[in-house]
Every structure is written in C-alpha cells, then in structure tokens.
Image (cartoon, rainbow, N blue to C red; front, side):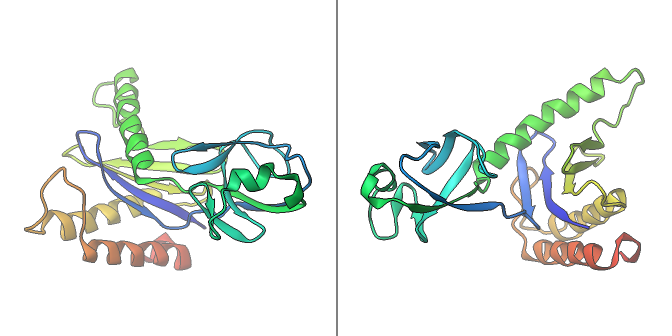
Length: 217
C-alpha cells in the first residue's frame, strides 16, 4: 500500500499545500557508444530526452549523471559542459544515467490550476443538481481521490490503485487542516499553508495508514 502525495487547492483554484510522501524513483543507467542515439535538449535548467526512447529511457526523462559525475543544469561537477562531453567521440564509451525529472513547485501549481476547471466541468455535466464533482480520477498506475469541503477547498490524495479507505483518510486530513491551519491565528485563508504541526501530524497519519491500514486511524 503506497500513498504518493497530498495536495490542497483553495476555493479559487490555487495550490496552497503539497506533500510528496512516496515518489517513485525511476532511474536507468546505461553504457553508450558513439554516436549517442538519443536526442537531448536543454530546457528549464535541465537536460532532457527529446527523442529516442530505449531500455526504459523515455522522452522527458532527465540526464542525471555521466560516468558517475552528477549534472547541475548543463554542467558536470568537474565544470565540463555535458553536451561537449557527449559530442566528443574520444570520451566514449560513456556511462549515462537518466531518470524521471522531479516535478517543480511551479509545475505543481500549474497542474493544480488545471484540476480546478476540470472539477467545475464535471459538476456542470451532471444530470442531477448539486453534484459533488470529481471524487476519484483513475489511471492505470494511480488513483487521485478528492474531497471538497463546504467552503470549496479541495483536498486530494494520490495513491496506488489498490489503496483502500481513502475517503476516511481525506476526512482525517481535513480534521488536521481545521485543527492546525484554520485555528492558527497567523494563517490567512487562501494563502500557502506553512505550519510545522500540520506537516508533522500529516506525515504521522500517512505512515500509520501505510503500516497498519486505514481501520486503525
């Protein structure tokens, strides 16, 4: 049983909290001969695969290291430019590690803003009035569970498809949100949640669910 993350979206559609709990680490390290049969490009301060999927390496994956040397931006730790190293035939064979790029805060904010109109569309498509909107969004590798409060705040949990009892977990997270965020005199509505007690209790709750199941929450 795995819970991947928790997100809270304000009633206006802005991301006010996110917690990465168990993000799968996808990395592939291969030895390549010259010329490299994967096309790379530099985008958003990282080198990513643009074309040429193979051996578990996919378009969008990030270049992590060359011959064990980590890459920051487009430079190796020894100061050399990664593209210059890859384009030089004399450097081959090269041991190159690729992995899925970690989602940035800006990307999470963008995705949260996209979920808001989808939720509204789902509510309007309902043949019955007062539709609750999207409660579960299912894919082959995960399920997104959503609970909307009476004030329009949306709490979301991303978990593996077989994880049960997410409706109970969402209500427990809402209780933590009410106790440690809303009752905090220094917290303002619609603003990002920065509360250590909320973070600590949420982490404890998620670990408890994964270890002993939702019935013991």
